Length: 98
Image 1 (cartoon, rainbow, N blue to C red):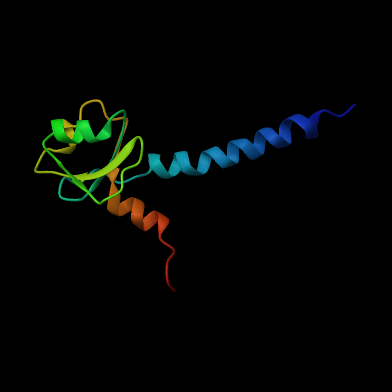
Image 2 (spheres, rainbow, N blue to C red):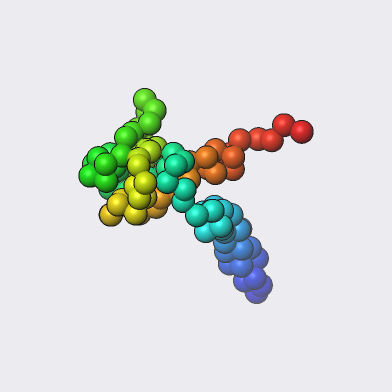
């Protein structure tokens, strides 16, 4: 009996599906304080307020907000799970015209 197909092929497909987003976040450029930031974490709005930042945009996700602050804002976001440059995320998600 060949068990290679039923076990390995779904495992490889799952690994491929997970590797793309994980590598994209891992290769994100360093955070620039002057740029809008995507802040992910529990009660992200409160984290931004505690760090002295301002929320950007009318929509809020359950665990994330886009925010901007003064110099050192990204370093003051204690408790955030992820802080990345929102401009980079926009470039990653916007199809190129070419």
